[in-house]
Length: 118
Figure 1 (cartoon, rainbow, N blue to C red):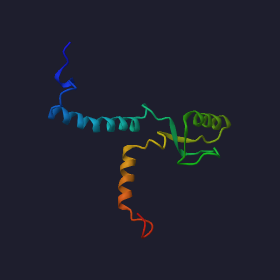
Figure 2: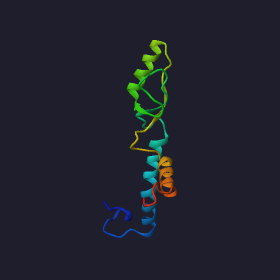
Figure 3: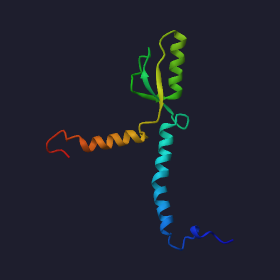
Figure 4: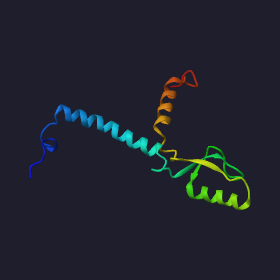
C-alpha cells in the first residue's frame, strides 16, 4: 500500500502543509478550549454560587461540586427555605479564554504596587 505524499515522514513538508499544520496547531487547541469553557453541556463539573439562599456555609462567588450543591438545594426546599442558586462553571484551574485574556491585559497595564516592583 502506497501512502499519500502528505503522509511521507522522510520528506520535508511542503510550504502549504507547514502552513496548514502551523495554523491548525494554534486554532484547534483554542477551539477545543473554547468549547469546553463556553458550551454548558460539554464539561462544567462545578457550580459558581450566585445566591447562597439560606445555606449558611455558602457564599456568593464560591465554587462547589454539583452533587453537594444539589443536596443543599434539595435540603433547603425540604425545609421550606430559600435554596441556593448558581451557574455551571469549570474549576478554577481551567479559566475561560476571555478571563485569561483579561488577566493578561491587566497584568501589563496595571502599574506595580511598589516603585521598585516588577
